[in-house]
View 1 (cartoon, rainbow, N blue to C red):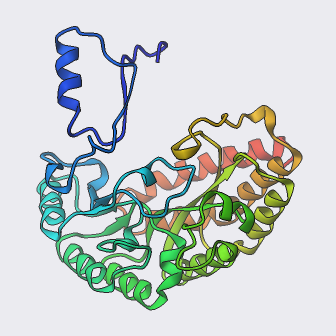
View 2 (view 1 turned 30 degrees about the vertical axis):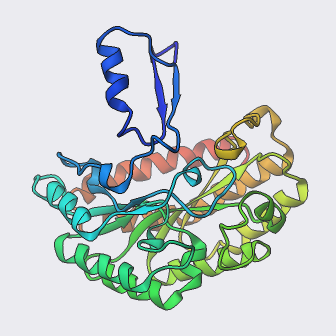
Length: 331
């Protein structure tokens, strides 16, 4: 904060408090260095305004909050609210009236749970949402979804995929795998597997990834490396799971643990704490990504007018990474 001259950081949904912070700044009053929005200050559905200008890449919120309760995530501390169809469509209209946005990236912590107030997808509301959006847009993307929601209703997911693929051959989303260890899943994210048991988490991941592969949803998956109380057995289980996922089209990115949510008082995981198993996991993820990256580049450029221009640059970028990996002894 000192290096970049940042006076105040606000964490949380700022609609109800940003006014008083900005007034204080304009009046040269002392600002809090860090402001965490309380539950009481979190806006209700009616207090969240529509966007007034086009959003980046057509991003459109369809809801806020999460019901999974993962201990490492701050979003799970916020109440779950789903926007009505009318609000979502109004924001899409704001985007597509510009000359730059033709599609919509639906944003929620779990798009598959739209309209639901538990961890089971609501078939009727989810289907209607996608039919309405497909009618308006040239394409759809998702910000995030959960493997458990997909695995819990394979037929529903396939139907949604068919609707989306009316306009495009594939779509993407960010997916949290986090770990391959049932024990760690039980400790840190017991509801992430619901309606399945946390002990079934590795199988939930394999089932969900298989369904995404079959229906052309290409996930960018994350793992959390170095969570508190992580054991060698936990890392071994994650390594085994990554091996099982080799046949599923995806990117898998390991991330060092950052203290957030209910674990915000824990220590950061630093590179100096890495063990041989941590390094093995990072390398295995890199090899998985190398295995799929050429196909993903080709898919991302299908039908794009700039494909011939950008294709060599993407290949060059990947080539540089492969060269650096080989120099580091990774083959």
